[in-house]
Image (cartoon, rainbow, N blue to C red; front, side):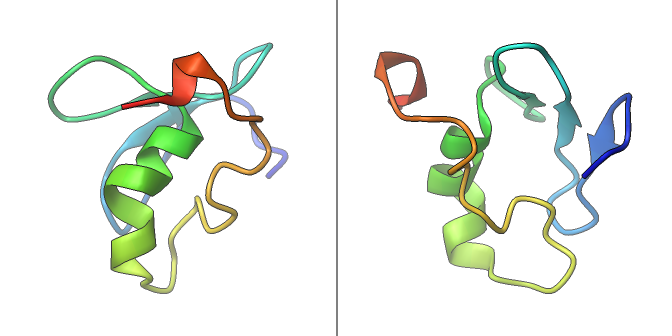
Length: 68
């Protein structure tokens, strides 16, 4: 993933913005979150080809900011 600017997942349509300190995920509803939160809410259940968050947010270490 070397693109700059927002990415849109073709599976769930969330927007992921590359940011210093960790990517920001813009959900259709609710506050923005992290790739780890996206994994917990959507990706782990979807498992469809084309998902751009297949690592489960492992690039962003856990912490209180990643809790639902």
